[in-house]
Length: 171
Image (cartoon, rainbow, N blue to C red; front, side, top):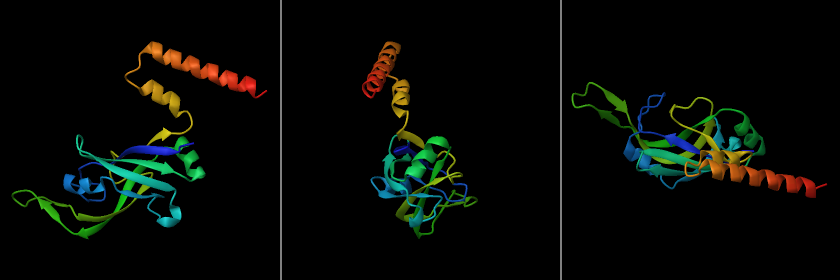
């Protein structure tokens, strides 16, 4: 069951719904905690809580969320989803090139309201990864670039031994 999810929520780009998110606006997400919703359906769809962080090296808004709803913990293990932010606009703004031939809708963001689990996000680069839940320990071991093959084999053998001992003790 997907207890904790994490990933990228925003990058500096124009979303599919025509809103441009520049780096200064993305920085506003750093340290913000908000509810985790499903498909922007509001408080009745709340399934957990998210904390955002701004990654200065990549200019991305990253997130980590605790999923409290058991039905959604299972869905997140079994289906593909991405994420989408919800925020208020404190004032409209356009960012234009020097010749004013092209302008982008780049509003000044007000309150950061939520992060939603969605099937089709406004930012296609958004990601959702299960970081704590069923079978995640083995994935963490295999994804750790600092481990060599011997360490992986040893870790797998220890897990097998522990599981065998637990099964024998439960009989």
